[in-house]
Image (cartoon, rainbow, N blue to C red; front, side, top):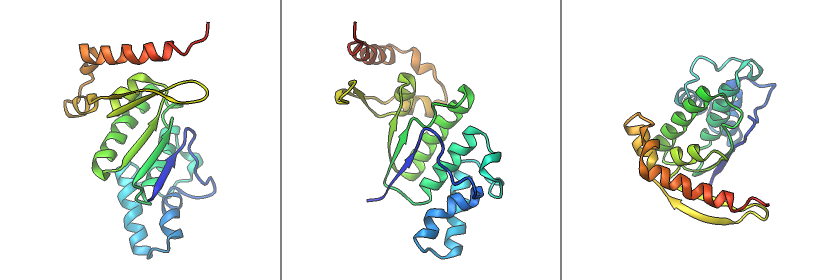
Length: 183
């Protein structure tokens, strides 16, 4: 099955334009140019970068680069996307906007996303299943089935973070993490 990766630091081809970066996978698959154009436009639109296709990647902000990286992955129609701390280096507002975008893309593309983060609130906001890992060697300590993401994105409110259920799950996760701290 097809898979894609979005890394912590955007891994774009710096000598290529935004369009060329997004088109790279479909071109390598030998698709006709008309189909490549349609794919590129669809995914640049989906990540809110319409009109930036001719820009060089070095002209873009960190958040824009991450959106290009995401569009490039999506252009290959992966069944699974691994996102390795893709929002870690972004400012708070860009990070919140990217979280909303990732949720929207997850819903529209019906793609499984494995999202790696050190931010508990981010995991609770975006995840449906959270796996808390041990330190070396990394093993799953516990998994949590959660559904705060629907409440956050359907109600367009982060007020769920003040609910007893949310606070209790967060406390359980923090307790597991704290159990890994050496004295």
